[in-house]
Structure formats: structure tokens, C-alpha cells
Length: 189
Image (cartoon, rainbow, N blue to C red; front, side, top):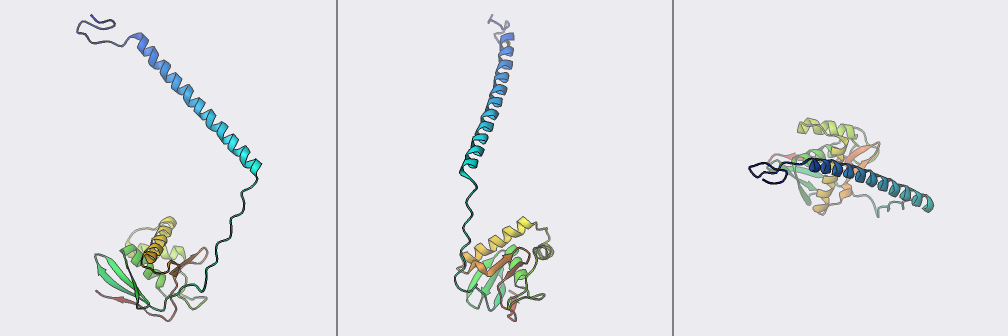
């Protein structure tokens, strides 16, 4: 017979083992409390160091763009298959876009409403999200719209086009820097 066991040779947990497990659990709980105290002490040290060093230095101003902002004279959209579209700028440079980005650039290029300059009108972020929802059948949060604008700029950049062709400003919204009276053409594929 095995100590603490039975006749078939299997051990049974002894009372000492149960007490050991409870002791280990208490030790872990105490350790967790000590880790929290160390974290708090580190936070206090970090706070004191920040107070000693003073306020954060001001951020340097953004670099001003060199030369005039980019614009395009004309803009053409053609179906490219598999839901993608081919967008041609100024009859020269092209970029292939997936459906969501194609819908976004078409909205930004639309010349609806008044404009304070010679470019197509601004569309508020809410209006862009509303139009995207109608075209694509799903809702677009402010974050999702921001991500789409970023992806569109990245796509233009990858096609060696100026990413600043997509313009967005708080309070105004977004637009493609497309000259008014220009023709945006959608061709059937």
C-alpha cells in the first residue's frame, strides 16, 4: 500500500496537499498586490520626473507644401472587372481601385453644390458617409471613412500620383482636387 493511497496503488490527495494549494494561491494573491504596488510606485516616479522636466516642448509647425497644391483637369472612370475600376487622371496616369475606393473617389469628384474656388465642391464627412452607405449598402463610421480616405491616398501614392489630390479638412469635409467645369466620365466596360 502506498502512503496516503489505497490498495490499488493510486495516491489520494492528502490534507497537506490541499493546504499547500491554498497557501500557494494566497502567495500568488500577495504577489499580485506587490506587483500593483510596484506599478503605482513607478507611476509616481514617472509623474515626478515629468514635473521636474517641465511641460512638453511645443510641436514644430507642419512643413508648408512647396509650390501650388496639385489639381487635375479631368478624371475618367472605367470598369476593370471583378468589381474594380480604372481611374485615369488628366488622360495620363491611372490607378486601379477596389469597389469601396472607387465609390469614394466618385463621390469626392462629384461637382454638386457651390465651391469657394475653382475646384469641385466640398462634401461634408456625414454626406460622404451617407452616399457611401447608399452605394455600398453598409454604414460607415467616422473612423471607417478616415481609413478609406487614407487607403485612397495610399493607392494614389502607389500609382505615382500626388496623394494630396484627396483633400480633407475639419469643418469642410473632403473632395478630389478636380477643377470645376471638368468632365468626370464613367465608361461602361
